[in-house]
Length: 433
Image (cartoon, rainbow, N blue to C red; front, side):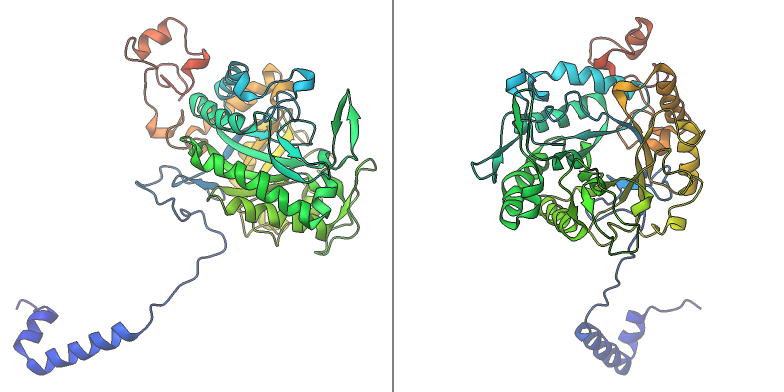
C-alpha cells in the first residue's frame, strides 16, 4: 500500500487537520534555537561560503575564499626598511607605487621559487613619510605615498599571484626618538602609552589604511593584517598569564603587558571596523605562548629560531603548547632551517602536525639552495599550499596564456616561463604543477 503524506492524511481526516494547524501555530511562536559556533574550526568563515567542494582542506590551516590551506612562503620583509609604504624623501627612497617594477620583479621571483604567501612590513618604525604627526607627536593622517603604495602592493600581488600578510608595526618602533642619518625618527612608545594619541593612530592611520584595502579590486590578495611584529621585545615586567617574565631589549622604551595588550586590542578593533580581513600578531616565540590568548586574533603566529629549540622543540603540536583553540602559523623561521632540520623538512613536519603554515626569513638573504627548499615543498604540496586561482592549485592546474596572441606552448618553447609577466600564467606548460 502506498503511504500517504501528512497533507493527504489531513485532507481525509478533519480532526487531524485541526491538530496539525495547532502544532504549526505553536511552532511559529517558539524562538529559533541558536547554536553557538565552535571556537576553532577549519570550515568556512562568515562570508566565505564555498562555491564547490574544497579539493584538499588542510587540518589546522587558514581559511580564505572558501578554502583551507597551509600558508607556505617567505618574509619579504621589506625592500627598504620602513620606506616601502610611504617613502623617505630625504634619502630619495621611494615607495612601491613610484618604483613598481622593482617590487614586481621581486614578488614574481618569490612566486617562481614556491612562495605563495608573502609577509611584508608596513611601518616597522616611524622614519618614513607614511604616518604624519603633529607638533605634539599625535598621528593626524597617512602621508607620503602610503595610500598609493598599499593599492599598488595589492595590485602587484594579483599580478604575481601571491597573497599578503601585512605587518603594521614592530618592536623596532619603540626605540626612543632619534636622528638616523639626518632623518628624525619619532618613537611609537608615547603613542601607545597615551590614550588620546593611541586613538588618533587608530582613527587617522589604521582605519584609513584598512579602508583602502577594503576598497581595492584586489582585496582578496590580503590574507591578514598583522598588528605588530615581536612586541615582547618591547615589553617589561611579569606576564599576567603564567608565561616567563618579559626580557625587553635594553635600548627600547618598553611598556608593561597591560599597555601593549590594550594597544593590540585597539588596533584589532580599528581593523575590524573597516572590513573582515583576518588579524594576527607575530609573537617572538613560544616562551610567551599565552601572551595573546585574550585578544581577538583569528590565528596565532609564532616565530621559531634556534634559541628556542632546546626548550620548545619543533616536534610538538600546537595543542601540546596549549594553542589548540586557533590555527598556529610559524611566521618566521630561518631559511636554512632550525634544529638541524631544513625548511622543507620542517614544513612537511608542521603540515602533518596541524600547524597553519611556515614562512622563511627572509627573501633578500636566501641563497639558491634555500630557494630550492621552498620550491621543492611547494611542488610536493601544490594543492595544500595554493588558493583557487593561484598556480599549482591541485586539480585546477591549467594553462592561461598572458594574452591572446601567443599560446602557452609557444611561450614555454621560447623560454619565457621565468619572466615576471608570466607569473600565474601557463602553469601546466611551464611545469609548475
